[in-house]
Length: 241
Image 1 (cartoon, one colour):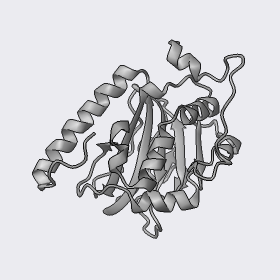
Image 2 (tube, one colour):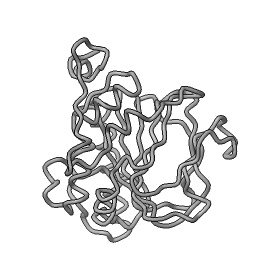
Image 3 (tube, helix red, strand yellow):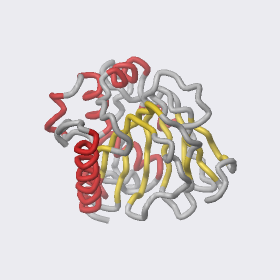
């Protein structure tokens, strides 16, 4: 375990978890998150409505960047937060905070480092999206935070699954509504996917990677892919990453 990871290992004697949940301007309900049971089988996971407090979720949704194409895009860097809509910037800053990493490390019982956190955004779902998969071995914990005002479609609801070949082998189904969180530990059987959907489907994805180098490699790869898609769709340069 490296020094940075150890700093967020809640098994370390004397470690305490900061609590910002009572702060009026802190957008995350960390106390509620810590109180949400973690299901252990068939892989560690949890679902929580209201992880992002309702007023903060509305503000973040209204300020969510639009990209006009499918696929994930690296979130703007810390230095670019001032160029974003305030509600979205506030949420992004909170998600990247050491306190949030500490909370997820405590909940999942694994050492995590904010330096190994990759944050990506997506605002549109394509018909081919949602195939059943499990994340790559370079990922340790994955979290999705949805920002959609309503959801009536059957498709686009993430399903945590028991099998790699059956979309109806459901452990949990998650409507992608404002402030809802789904998080899980990456394992060889952490299968997930959703039925097809086309249209707006906003979320922020957090991936705590095995180390900072892995996070940097994946961010660079997603940045190149997003730049190519912008050229193909005539979307221009877009926000700096």
